[in-house]
Length: 67
Image (tube, rainbow, N blue to C red; front, side):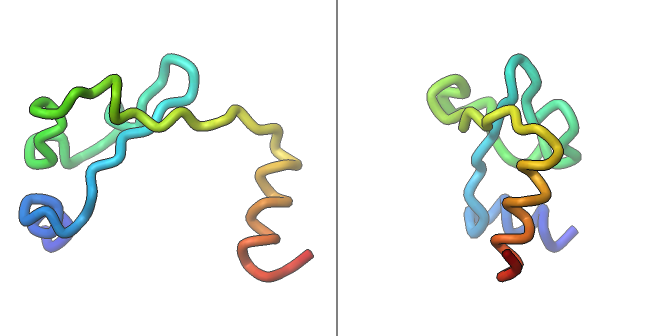
């Protein structure tokens, strides 16, 4: 509920993403309050790269301060 309130107040930016034809909005529980329908959806989509499993783990390790 508090995350929904933050989105509604504008504290949290709505930044939809896509990998190929799949968007994060398909799985989002906050569609009713994020007001994505009022935005130019295609212009705001962030295209995410399709990564292999090894690359994903490598990047996570780097963010964690590992390798």
